[in-house]
Length: 100
Image (tube, rainbow, N blue to C red):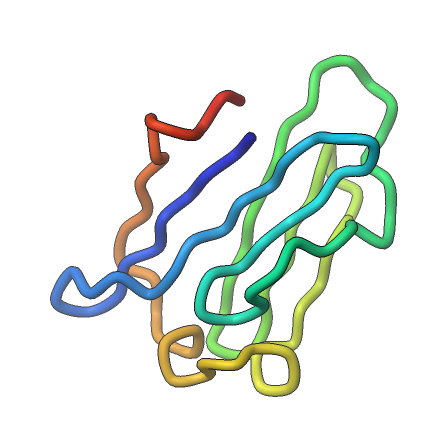
C-alpha cells in the first residue's frame, strides 16, 4: 500500500491518499472520496513502478510509469473541497501502513 498524508498551511492535515493492491488496484482519498474505488485504468505491467502524485487547487492526478491512472476534479468529486483545494506544503509517508 502507498499511504501519503498531505498537509497545507500551518501544518494542517488536508487528508491522505491511499493506493492498495488487491484483485484490482484501488485508491482512497480521505476528506474527498470516502470509500475505496477501483482505478479505472490499470497500471503498466512493468515490474518496477514509479508513482507520481500531482495536486493543484483544482485537480489531483496520479501517474504510474508516466501513464495517468487517475484524474480527479476536486470541485466536483471531493466532499470537502475546502481542504482539498488548499496548496500542499508538506507530504509524509505513513510508515505504519505504507508498504511500497
